Length: 343
Image (cartoon, rainbow, N blue to C red; front, side, top):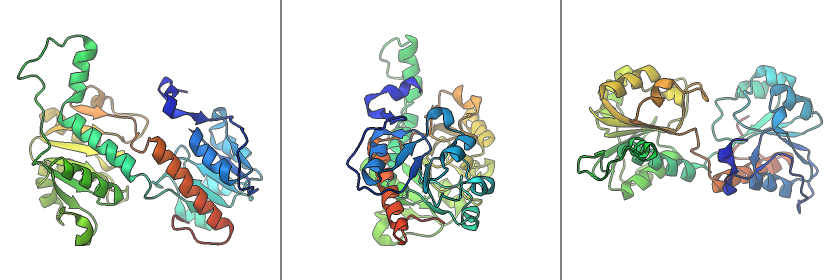
């Protein structure tokens, strides 16, 4: 366990078997990853037979061995759920509960072929991720990495009027690529900072929920309006490498790029070149292509404010994810159709 996980908010249950007052539902459930203790308690308060896979067994063989006789497997993006894994799962497994909102690591068609129900956790992480989006946006705009390095290195020589001049947010245009629930929450927060909002989505939102944001249907016009670009679209074949060299050139000189979606939305070579040339002034990145590997060039750039994919990492968010999965599992077990079903 990383030392960063020793924070009192970050309790993780691995071997915790403390009894809880459950609803005495005997459905056997396997939690195949380390979850926060409070999230595990949500499952154990609803079901009387919940086991947690030990960290040493966080492998596909470990999962398959532990899933024997289990009806529900709770998984995370640690596991790629492809046709081979669905084929190898024990026949007892009926439900895959994804402890994530994203499902690009799951072959949904394979799940259907193998008659495995799949549910996820949509629409419960918008506040957590939107909060972090503002953190990244502010960190990049106010040159937080450079300031932190001055303090840590002991080289700060005192206040100076020219020291680390950044950008105010008021009056800036925040362009949101992907105006789903997270994008809308970021829009609300950014407007409180006095920002103007433009957005690009597959379709325009009803005016009743745009809340002053301006829809721009053309990529070039949209990107050309952005002082700060926020990537919050889902990863699809259409959005993969959306931010490439051509589109970066359409951004205003000195624009800031923030990514809270998936690293694959960005062509790393193109963004790094733009950062080196100054066409993109700074970037706030919580996600990366080929995670957990990060292109080392980003780490050498003081204009890059980077975090390790923690957009949804709040106590409230993690507990809400468990609540949503428990409700979905309970509905499936009685033959009902949960709203968060993917397969």
